[in-house]
Amino acid sequence: MAGVAARAVHLGIPPRAAGIATATLSVLLALLAGAALWLGAQARDARAGAADREAALDAARAHAAGLVSLHHETVEADVRRILATSTGEARKEYESGLDRLRARTVTGKVVQTGVLRAAGLVSLSGGTAKALVVADVDIRREGSKEPPRDELYRWSMELTKVGGTWLVSKAVQVP
Image (cartoon, rainbow, N blue to C red; front, side, top):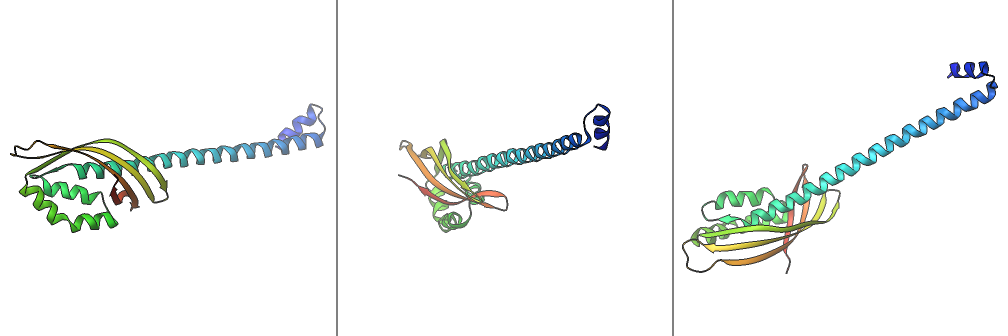
């Protein structure tokens, strides 16, 4: 900046005015750099928040897809899918009813196929989120003459981020 002051004197600008202009320019540059860093951090945080919201919603969808897709021939894999997307209270609840679910599915030759209709995130704060999910389910018994049953399921799901992965910690059917 000393070079700027020397050039200012050469151009006929008083040294004091040149010093003030140099100091002012330095402050403005520092403020602009700070503002650029702050805006960059805000944009990065917004992108991270959007990615987190999408990941939580994807986890709710995956869990619901597991709940509505059961087949008597693949019940073990179906159950593993449900457990893989759950934690806490939800996981304990599913684990406690697994023997009953397996028996009913295999004995009844159940084929349950679902289609997710809608899913939305209600809230997200830190490592917890809440989502609503809606699915249509077609339930039939292989070899049965009974017509398939169509059901509409709606869930309110609470999700928890565990080790960087969103998992359903509570799933309640909503009337």
